[in-house]
Length: 110
Image (cartoon, one colour):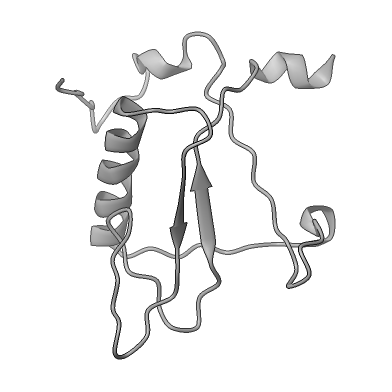
């Protein structure tokens, strides 16, 4: 399947039609405690990292399985692993990207 993206104009993006393009972003400490409310995270990506991650996320969406998740680990000198189209620098935190069936955004405010 081909997914066409209009780079200049986002007015006709089909994925926005039902307002179910929802994400949950959480941050956990080393003990597994959810510290999302008191935290801030930064994600910096090079141009090719944006392209790589975006491409791999589109592939993941087209092979969507509820509950599927991928772990991205920081690279080590003797083990440089690329996941989801990017390398994480050695001083990065771990990232888990998961697929999940979500409600529409309005349902989160009911």
